[in-house]
Image: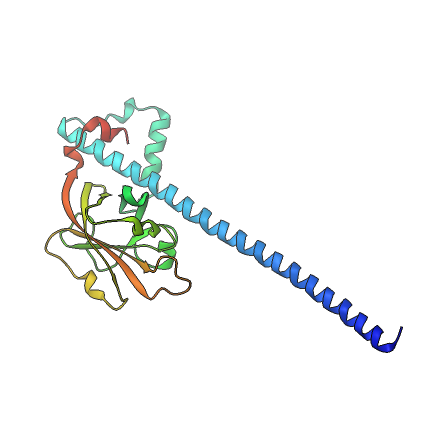
Length: 239
């Protein structure tokens, strides 16, 4: 074998080794990405489960308080079983962070609403934009969510669709009034309103790769508010 053949064979062996090493590196990178994605999904699911349970317990306690007030009779905890009393105590030890549960049937969405719009919050839930109205207040309540997260289903909404927001005081019913796409600098969408309104915000286009250039805005007006005291006591107490 000539020297040139020997050098060619050596280069081939080196190239094959480099390709093999590259394949291993890509497999390891892919595995790491899958593990990271799985961990993020698990954390989001855990947050939703924990916040939902705490919120339901707080709603149940608030309803029981209203029912007891209606009947002029306070619950007698001495009649409770040890298991029930332990669960009640646990709800007192863990303060509720969620301010409500947002439900949109046409978007196949039921998600807990937290306070804030930072990435840590929006990776786990949807969040009230600071400076906008709180649930139950007159004004414009703005809620933000990731387009590749809980708010991806907003693309299915149409004018007239129903939205509900369950809070510790009752259930607010909204109806979609308008849907628009705006630039990020359009901060007027957060402006206060005289009547109770709801503004849902996410990035757009929904399947854009990289930083999305626009915002998808769903405007809704409140059409009804049902305080817990006006709802059927049997149905509410069983939540």
